[in-house]
Length: 338
Image 1: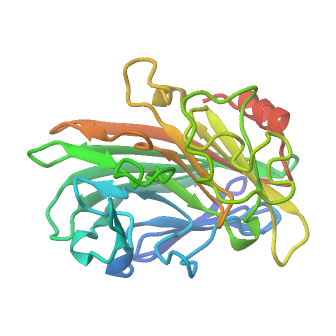
Image 2: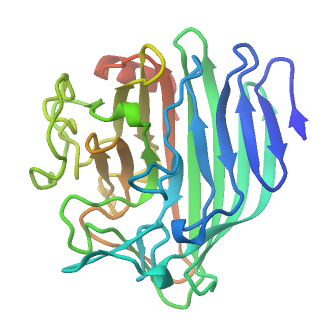
C-alpha cells in the first residue's frame, strides 16, 4: 500500500518486509525500514538501510564482511543482562570475542500503530518485543521514526528516532557494552550507525571548544588518516567516550563524486550529561577500521532498568550533501528546535 499526498513524501509498505520513504521532487528513496526477520546469528531486529542523501548517495552499510550484523542504522543492545542483542560473537573479559550462540537474542516486530505521510512528514510507529536466545519476553518497545525537514535548498533532510523500552522481566535489566565488560574504548550499544566503506577515515566534528567527560584511552581509535581531524584535531574529534549534545561525521563517497555529512543529536530530555540525576550518555565513534557512531547508553558504566520501568530516548539524525562544519551544524540545529 502507498500514500502519495501531492505535497508530501511518498510512503510504500511492502507487507512483512519493509517500508520505504521517497522524496517526490527528486525521486530519491531516502530510506528503507526493513523489519523482516534475518539470520539468528546476527540478532534479528529491524533496521534502516539504505539511508540516502537528496543526491541519491548511500550513507549506510549493510552486512559488511568484517561484521555481518552491522546493518545501517539500528537499535542495539550489545550486553543485556548476559545476553547479546547486537549479533555475532560476544565479548567476554579475559577471553575476547567468543562464538556463543546461546547468548544471541532478538528484537521482534509486533505491529505498526501508524504508517503515514502528510504535511511534509512521514511517520513509522511500531511496537516490538525484546527476547533472549531462549525466547522469553524481556522487554516491550514502542518506536517512532519520523522523516521531516526535507530541504532541497540546503540539500538535507532529517529523521527523529524515539524509543521507549519497558522492562517486562521480574528482575532489573542491565544494559552494558564490551566497554563495561572490560574492553577499553568499546562502549557501543543503543542506537548504532555503520557508515559505508568509503567513509572510513572521515572527519568527526563536535561542538566546541572541548567535549565534556572522560576520554577513552589513547589508541582506541587506530591510526589517524590525513585530514580526518581537520577541524577538531584527533580523528575521533576528541569525542570518543565523551559527552556532547551532537556529533557530525563527514565522509567521501565511493562510486560518486562528493561528500556527505551525517549529524547525530540528543533531544534535550535525554539529559545526555546526567546533570539531573539521569544515566549519562557518551559518544562511541570510530573512523578506523570503519565508520561508526553510537550515542552509547553504557560506555563507562552499566545502565540498570528496574522492573516495569521504561527507558525513553529521542535522537535526531540529519543527512546532508557535502561537508558540514561546526557552524553549519549548529546553525541548522538552532533553526530547527525540538
